[in-house]
Length: 52
Image 1 (cartoon, rainbow, N blue to C red):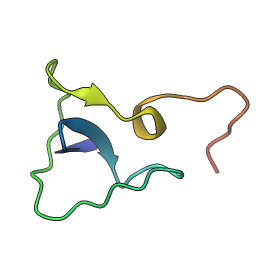
Image 2 (cartoon, helix red, strand yellow):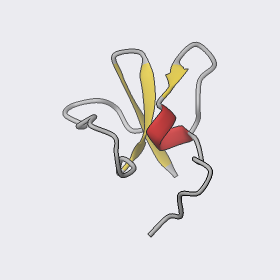
Image 3 (tube, one colour):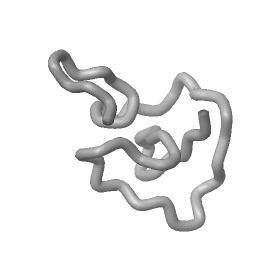
Image 4 (cartoon, helix red, strand yellow):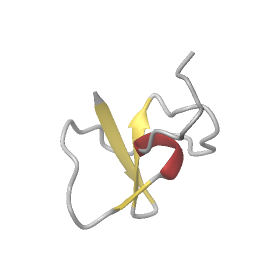
């Protein structure tokens, strides 16, 4: 899985449904650094929500 960091928040690439982040020139990476916040839409699994 690939990730990108925008405004000190990490998102998956492509972004999950519900996430409004848009990747522009951000570097894609395959690791999650410790010093960034996690996007609740991209990085969390919400109860009752299934991936479609």
